[in-house]
Image (cartoon, rainbow over all chains, first blue to last red; front, side):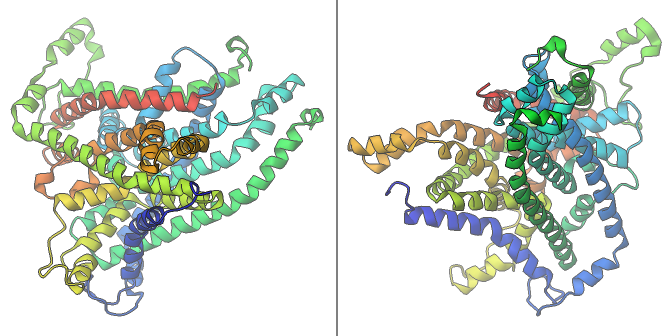
Length: 278
Length: 304
């Protein structure tokens, strides 16, 4: 049908849009393999800047701090965010619901400088030593809201009758959750975890406010270098980070596509009455 | 679903754990910001007068209220630096949101015109860059926009310009950075509403002899307004407080309020003024924030 077809304008806008989104990253990756000391002069292919990185102790330390914070806060945020999503979709109209949903959605768009400053002032007010833990708490607070939204979207359009069937047949709520609900929302929970992880790994502003001695994260380290201008070794770090994220996403999507074959199977299994027994 | 009365202790944990966390680490911090914005700055560690001395009893409470002052707000209002910075941020955010809408709408629209399988791929392609670090993406533009960088090399090679123009430290660079970083946030909500649209409506309009551009303007655009609203708020609110983009790509005369707050805090160590800036910024954003939350809540609770 004509209306479903693509006009040249449609094709051009998608092509230009994607080029705009990807070209800068491609250029960055190419220049990270530039042999020349001068960032803008092409001196042939080389991996010398990657070798330079290996000798940069401060950068490697920062990377390990970032990974630790990201793992810990993403794990905590996944639990808290999934709970928040369950509370918002399954508990009906409880007291304080409006305030609760406001607190879940607001951090998503709140300017980071405000969130960062307010958390820092909290830590100072209660005299909590700033460092690894404070950044982790700060990140958990922000990213749990992203997890909540991702999981909630899944919970909203999922067939409630599966849960009801299990419970009508006498399956206790906790068991229903573990055997019916959790397998069904698992892809969203995993996606939420990955999103949380990458957001934490990425954050500069909130970490800058809440960090303390000995807890310099990778973005803080990169930022202090980048302010001074473009450097070939920074191109190399960025390329490694892009590669790590790319591998994680490809791995996750492979995992999830295989999962999505499993999920309908679970749903079918959960449907018949005899499922609540096993 | 089981009624509230029958909710087990376990369900209680599911609700109260995230609730308590958000109250402790999201709500409470704001109250502290509010309090500190009303205190005097002091040359001390931490650099403001004490928050609240409960051990002093009633007199402590009285001195707490006596210690509050609006000095910092008066200061913000009297120094044009801050007012200009707020206006600049709102102006940059408004203009770049408009740019995002103009660039994002055709992309979102075009994606809905492609076959369903391709649509899924294109949506993933739009989201993907969002997963790579924000800082890296801005840094990538520093690479491209520098004086003898790829963009100027290209422009010179094509004889579009004779002299390489300066891109970095300009408003243009800030707009490019913002549009680049926020494009997925605009395209996705637009795509979500456009994709749900009933094709029969377009067909009906066409059958009745309505030209395509008119159908687009009278049917498609009004029906996509929820997506336009969501995308606009999702971009506008965080852009107003943006720090990294203007700091790395902009100049000193694109000093946005996020940078001003950052400077007050880290360079001038004036925490009460930084807190006052945050409170005013929050008040400025209150209307769009409330609108956004209302929409989010309605959208995600929808159909229940």
